[in-house]
Image 1 (tube, rainbow, N blue to C red):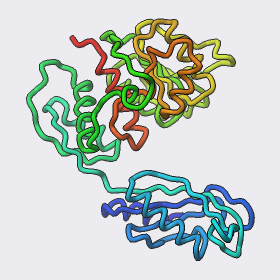
Image 2 (image 1 turned 180 degrees about the vertical axis):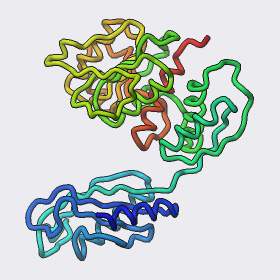
Image 3 (image 1 turned 30 degrees about the vertical axis):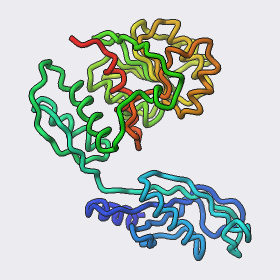
Image 4 (image 1 turned 90 degrees about the vertical axis):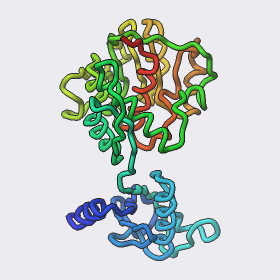
Length: 325
């Protein structure tokens, strides 16, 4: 695998677009095995590795090109058995292949004050951008972390040609014009779940110096900032508590989500959002006695493509409702 990582690093350093294809499951007698990898360049050529020969390789390369064009990961199924609808390969079997396009950092013009430029560059690079600063007038308030997040969110929305409107309004729950009033300073940012999204949310909470707590399970050591609290859930969520006036983001995709949301509303949380698809948002909302105060999907429209962007979108939404000094 040393050769694989060396090539990936070289391609990334040279700013080339490519895709990594990984076999994640095999059923039947397919020749490739789970974990088999290939690197596909921007011309659709396999330049390293192997995920099957003949039509299977062509099929993966075609999907890799589409994934690179869209800038989105995908899982594809190569059917090597079906002579009519599949690939018709004599070796047989079915392969599931994960395709992960790798792009050079996207240039991102950001209007930022001298107070926030270093933070904007740091956060932007974390999200896979190459921020280019356009200087603007100093902010009237000494709140560089807040300004940096808002400046970066506005820049991402502009380059993606999106509106920064609440996702709930655009494609989630029925929209009403009642806006929450989130106190400043915030009593607590409560993040529910255990994933890359919750990790990124926690990092932004720590950056803003908000009291931040992650309520979840199977915490991995060292991935959360030292300043935040990780609370392991107990059976039946008997230890689940919400502070009045807090901002709650449910990012667990768990069957307990309706319970978390209901208890957050009962505890008079200032904001309750759920990271979810439009379909899941509607399903969870339908299970609640009152969904009018739930922001689902949580966040602002930025056409997010990775966990750090999703976290930025959610925190930017909370800031849009926050009282200002």
